[in-house]
Length: 100
Image (cartoon, rainbow, N blue to C red; front, side, top):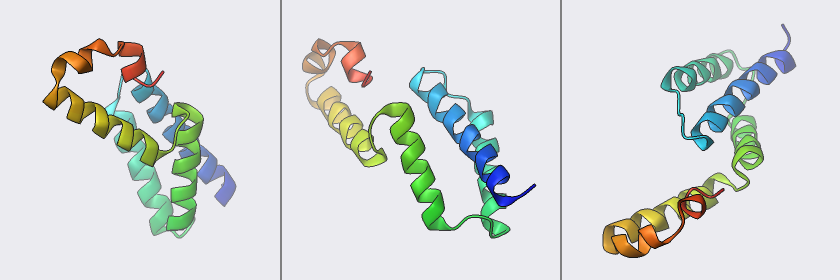
């Protein structure tokens, strides 16, 4: 296998992990498999940290429709609202809280 094929396999694994998270069915086994595959790619020098970050960001954007930083900020805001004002949190429709 060449570099592109290996990276494509990892991209598909990453996409599948993100899609399951978005659907509310996170699968730790698939997540850890993708992480292990990524670790092997890094150790063998197939991908650089910059390439990894770019692929993660693009795949996250494709699946969730927002960047990693945007999603983290949105979730942090919702978690703070849940802690400080649970009524206001639950007044937000679940579909909006999930970012769909």
